[in-house]
Image (tube, rainbow, N blue to C red; front, side, top):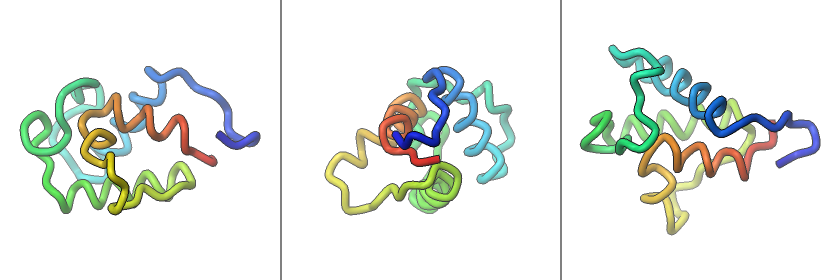
Length: 94
């Protein structure tokens, strides 16, 4: 994490990222309805690969790092809101 970022709790980060996801994808749910451990892709929120690309772009713009498609553990990173936020917490520059 960069010296310029303010450390936040994982719960606060999950709330923030859930809001970003709901707004970016225009989902018909409230951010607090995104369950931390439910799958983002397929079952759970039912997102598809285009949705995941959109999430990657929003995350990149908002947190200042790129989620790359060629990373081996992308399946784990995008497995749930909690796992995505754990990645953001370690990589963010903003």
